[in-house]
Length: 255
Length: 255
Image (tube, rainbow over all chains, first blue to last red; front, side, top):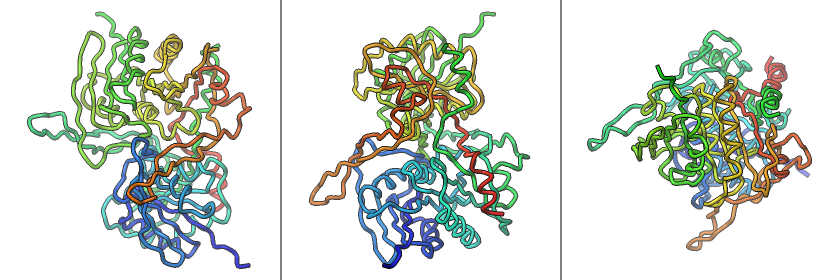
């Protein structure tokens, strides 16, 4: 009996038409059969949001040998949940989010719809990786990143990942990629987050913007340092949010 | 000069009209001055989602001594970000989400808009607490929880919380609360997550539902065990998602 190829479920938050999604498929299709369940439009900043207040819908877009594409009216995390429930005929071997147009390093992990895909895959017990390139434009050049992306995915397919962990992979825009670095999440915060725009004499309208203030720009362990120095940043990420180090102190508080 | 009272910023994901929000204000107003910036309608399941693709708007609803209430068209996390940028005249001493109508323990921390409020407060460097009651109805009875909620908030106001940590507090529905327990996040997953509903001969519409399968129902350290046994579960929660334990192994992969 012929051995089945690995099954890779892909989604994103930039939507079904994004270049990053097409490029990801191009890089990963040599590794296995691919099922895409992607949002039918942009869902940037959707985090792990779920659609709770209305039904969602999915639809077959096209099917070619080894690649099946669906679009879905829901959030990135909805897409993963719904694919498991409907179109997948077996458990996937890998769940991949991306390639996101924009940086999901540091605290952005909490807001990222791409990482929403990845966290959902991880919560379902499947090895999961999010890929993002630090370019918000419509047409980033993913060429140099391709071999790295395929290698990272191949390694995870071969070795798996421990329970409750996944990978957040961010790719710098640089003349020459220097390789990969294993990093931790940079400490810092977004500032100047809102741009005011008056509308019909009402000054209380705001548009999200902002810039990230890195609290530890010289720390070589961090994902921002890696990105600023030409490396692909691989940040191993946990879905167990427990702050274990705080448990004993809190027990004292409530004795 | 009179000492300023502590400033408490409150938001939620059930929206400005939710009973849980009014009850939270009742419980916490003895502890300080309160500013509410709450979504103008329900935002359950919004996680840390941000509104990136359109502007958001806020509006003063009412002001009485010690309590100022605004509503906002954005997500729970937007509300916190926008309050910091607009209506707060100083850094708050505490950010509180809730009281959510529904359980945010275990993996729900990733989907919860209430915890979106809390994570955002924490990322801004402010001690932050999310309160949730395990009752999805419109009219839970919060009475018995009140003194616990006030005490937990008072302790955090007095002692603070370490950087990058916050509290996820869940309250069971029970005849008699037995007290509080310091817990870790329960391992498990949601199953049977979609209810199919055909619409105009199209069978691809689904409504989110599901039940949670606890992978460790007998483990007394977990938040689910606490809730199932009549205790308020306090789960210390980190916003540093790095899986530190995986870093060395990954470095071997990419040597």
